[in-house]
Image (cartoon, rainbow over all chains, first blue to last red; front, side, top):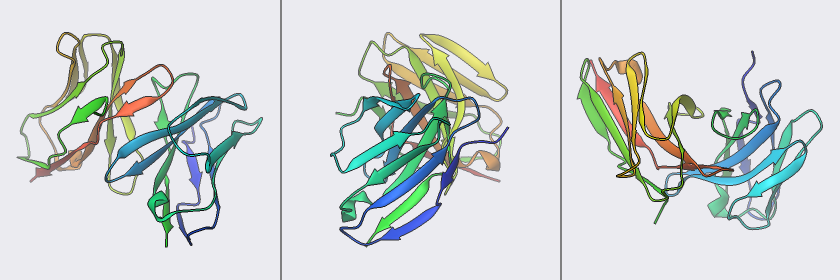
Length: 112
Length: 109
C-alpha cells in the first residue's frame, strides 16, 4: 500500500512569491492535515480537510490556505512568502480523525 | 506555554541500554497519546498510540500514560543504533495533533 506522497520534496522561492504544495494521501483515507515544522516551534497544525471541506484551522495567517479534491488529494498554498515561512511542510492522512495519522516525507521550503 | 512539553536532549546511550523518553501535557481533557519517530530528512513515523491511562507494549517499545500527573513516557529496550532519531510525543485535541518539540536520541555502538 503506497504511503503519503508529497511533491515537490524541495523548493526555493523568493520573498513575495507564492507557492503550492501537493499531498496524495493513502488510498482510502479521507482526512488530510497539514503541519509546519521549524526548529524553533516544532510541528504546528495548519489545517485539516475531510471530504473536500476544511474542518479545522490552526493559528496561521490567511496567507496560508488549502483545498482538497474529490479524490482526497490536497494542496496547500502560501501567498506573499516571508523569510519566516521557511520550514518543512508535512501532510498527514488518516481515515477520519488523527489518532492514527500517517505522514509524508514533507516538502522543504526555503524562502530567500 | 505549549500544550505538550518535551526535553529536546540530545540523549546519548550505548547500544543495548534501556531508553526512557518523557513528556508532560497541560490539558487534562486529552485522551489519546502518540509517539512518533522522525529520522533526519524524513516525515514522522507513528510508533504507537494509547488511549487514556496505562501501558501499551509493541516489541521493544512500551508507551506509558499517567493521566493523574499528565505524564507520557516511551521506553525502548535493548536500544539499537538504528533507533537513533528524534522522538516526538503528541496528544490529540479532537481535531489536531499537539506535538512536543522532540527528543534527539543517539544510540552508539
